[in-house]
Structures are given as structure tokens and as C-alpha cells.
Length: 477
Ligand code: ADP
Ligand code: MG
Ligand code: ZN
Image (tube, rainbow, N blue to C red):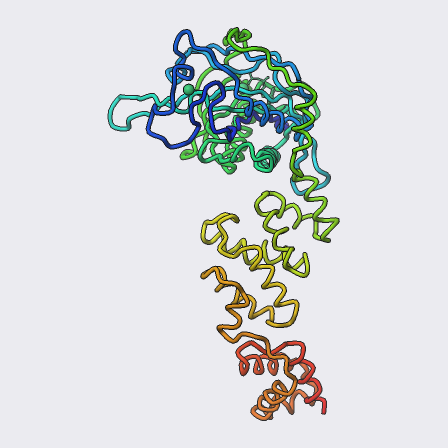
């Protein structure tokens, strides 16, 4: 029997506000334990939370960017459960009336048209604290700095059909939150977290199967691997005549498998009710319009523009716009580079290769977009050859110097003086009488050899087009 996977993701994105969602404590990462806390986020009796306006603004930005319907009147709710990292005994979240619902994003997985993936809802909530387990003793400690750090949870429809689609969806979401500048999107550091719900059903049937929810997916690779593993596990179970149980499972990245963590909680286990300490959240038309008007250009339209305005392939445009910093770099480079296509090639080729090898991101590039643009202008003007440009680029990356300075200091200007090149050609031909004779008898492939000799003589600086012309002329003579 053939099975089809059905996948829905729940993504938590930590918002980049300076202070927490309901108090004025700092959200900065890495402070000594329990130093960014106050009576509100510690859940002391008698305190009152106050919503951070920026959290709502960021949530609305995300909701608008994903085509959601905005609930201009939403509520906070208490989600009750006991855990040592949750001092109040409940998490403030949203339940029946989330800030936004019914959105969508489009994903590309290589083949065919982009696929629409529905977004069920986006809601605001507070993060819990962190337990730090002592590896040597049976002791756990609680750090409450993270308690009350703002999150949005983005819940997808069960529209995804493969691990690759789940990966593409997650990457697209991450690209969007980074374009919006509301979350740094770091899976490894936990500022962007994903739980995956997976079930399978016989191909061609409509009802969904029972799902398992996977946790601890802290890299794109792990997300895809874990889903892939889970699909296999469920298939085997069903083919053996067993049944999938609804539960929460933990991905073990070392052993590359999932293990049962706990039975699945139902909504009623959480005894949700509207939080009586917080006012209803009301968004007026004027503010919503202002937020809408301040949205940046989003990745899909930027990609489209790169194809139409600069004549890039869809593939190159997609790669350049997948990261806002990279797309910004490209456009800054174009302010100095005469042509778009070579700029895209150099950025996606030589520059990315260098950065990857050094483990650096584009905003840490020692080659500024201005300098790369100037390098391309030097090639375009015939001042240096493409080959020499590679050498110049390497030195730019190593030293951060401007290309013009490197070209001048090292005497790399291309030789385009016909007289000077003719002298070199004459010398090269005189030194290779046998090859010259063979060429004249029809062995035209020897042209490459002559060009190579001229390049050697000029240490790569000869203008290749001119060398070819001169060689043709002198050999045919
Ligand atoms: P909960 O909040 O209890 O985890 P939700 O109904 O909000 O449950 O669903 C959470 C996620 O699970 C959503 O992304 C949804 O698309 C997905 N999902 C729901 N049913 C299934 C299913 N049968 N198979 C796979 N994913 C599912
Ligand atoms: Mg869930
Ligand atoms: Zn606080």
C-alpha cells in the first residue's frame, strides 16, 4: 500500500523587542541567570501585566505579510499547566481570539508552480523560563531571564506533503521574519523554533490519519530528517497492522530517531480562559494602515522585480532574495557595477564561496558592495581581464582594499597596447617554429597554445581579445 504524508508546522518566533511582552525587563540574551526579572515576569501575586505595544506591532507586520485576516479585537488567555520553568502556573497566550487568522505563503520546491500553504493562525504569547540540568549531580536550576520574552506562534494548515516541503515552508517563514526585521530567525539559538505534526494516509483517501507531534528540531537539517524518519516509522507501524497513537515525540539528533515523550494534551487539559488581568487588544484602522504602509518589499515581489528589472534568471533571483542582506548587497553593488548579470554571478559564485569557506555571513564580508561593483567596472572597461579579476578579488577579500588600489600597486592593468602585444606575439612565434608550421598546415587547435604562451609572457595581463586578433593576423600572413 502507498501512503501520503500530511504535515503541519507550529513555529515559534521570538520577537526582537528590547523589553519583554508584559513588563520592562530586558530581553537581551546571555545575561547571568535571573538578572532580567521583576515581580511581573516572576509571577508574584498582585502584579499586573501591561502589553508591550511593539509586540503587537511586530505581530501585525507578520500577519499582513502573510495575507492574514486581522482580528482588530483579540484577547489574551491563560494556558494552565505546571512546570518548574513557569512560575505563574500558566502561560499567557491567545486562544479563541488570536490576533490573526487565515493567511498563506507560497513555497517553491524546485518542480513546477509555487505551492500555496495555508496559515491557520498567528497568536502572541510569552516564553517560559529555562531549566539548566547539572550534568554531574541530580540537580536542576531555573533561569527565568527568558520568562516573558515575546513570541508569535505561527500555525500552518496540514497542507505540507513531504519533508522537503516542510523545509521549504520553514525557510520561507524565516526569510519573511528576517525581511520584516521582527525576529533573527536563528534555529540553533532557539529564537526560531519548530514543532512538526505528522500523519500518513493511504494515497487517494481523504481523512487524515492520527498524528504525532515532533519536538526538539533545532536545525533545518534536523527538521527534514526527523519528519523523514517519522513517516517511515508510521508506515512500518501501519503495515504491521498496528496504529499510530497521538503523542508528543522527541527527535534524538545523535541516534537519528524519535522517541515517545508524553501523551498528547488536549486543549481542555489546559483549562484555557480569558486572562482577567489584561484588557482586550484593540487595533484601530489608522494604526493598522500605518503598519501596512511601512511594510518593506517582501521576498516574492523582490524576486519578481529582480527578474524583470535586471534580467536575472528566476533561480538567481530566488537565491539572491532568500536573504534580505544578500539582496541589499546585490542592489548596493549595482550602484557601481555596469551590468546586473555579472554582478549576480560574482556574488553567488566567488563571493559566496569565499564567505562560506570562512564561515562568514554577507554582512561580515570584507569586500564591500561598492568595491565589488568597482571591480566589475574595471573588467567592463577592459582595464583588467576576468582572469586577473580573480586575483584582485582574492586580495580584496584578504585585505579589504579597493580594487583600483590593488591593480595599481601590483601593476595588473591589462595590456591593450597593440604595438606592445605585437612585439610579444612576434617573440612567441619565433620561439615555436614547429608549432607555427603545423598551424599553417591546418592544425588550428594550436591557437590555444599560442594564446597561452602570450599570457605567460605578459603574466596574464594581455587583453585576450586583442591577442587573438594579432595572432590570427600574424599566423595567416
Ligand atoms: P495543537 O495545538 O493541539 O497541537 P492544532 O489543531 O492547533 O493542535 O494543530 C497543530 C498543528 O497540527 C497544525 O499545524 C495542523 O496543521 C497540524 N495537524 C492537525 N491535524 C493533523 C494531522 N492529522 N496530520 C498532520 N498534521 C496535522
Ligand atoms: Mg501543538
Ligand atoms: Zn519582568
